[in-house]
Image 1 (tube, one colour):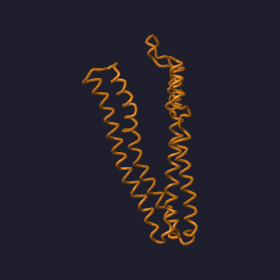
Image 2 (image 1 turned 45 degrees about the vertical axis):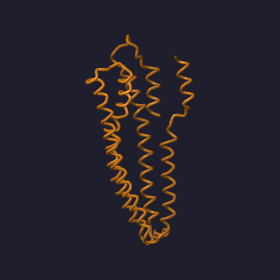
Image 3 (image 1 turned 90 degrees about the vertical axis):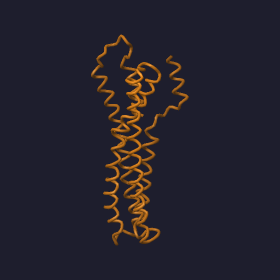
Image 4 (image 1 turned 60 degrees about the horizontal axis):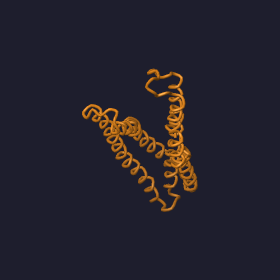
Length: 207
């Protein structure tokens, strides 16, 4: 959604015709960076809270007072293992995919010398996705795994204490529901409201 707002601002305020000054207006550039930063911070806030409450929730649900008794701890152990395994392979996938997109643009520009063609335009779009894939999203999974393990183990220590273990499952359910809310908020609350038909109609009217 932030990218959509940035593109809309660029179309309305930054002229891209050949006769326009080559030097970008500093005020407009700062506004574009501000839009992207604000939406990036909102997205990180939602994901951080979702991961945080999931770790607390599964730790509390793995309390001996939960279903399964002493064997309930296997729920939290399985959660940590799945986070580590899926996080590792997802990070490798995103790093490789981002690098492939980045290299494909270089091949089109240097080896094939096809700048200005539709193939080059497509490779630029791919590189736009590839750069955050390999430079930010993939490497950010490492602290997520560490963060989940650290806070999860601390929460697990509280969940197995004798004074709290009977209440821990109910608290865990609340934490999981809160985490699901932030997942919904991240994937649905921040998406573009317009349907594809509205976007196409608006584009056709401007042509």
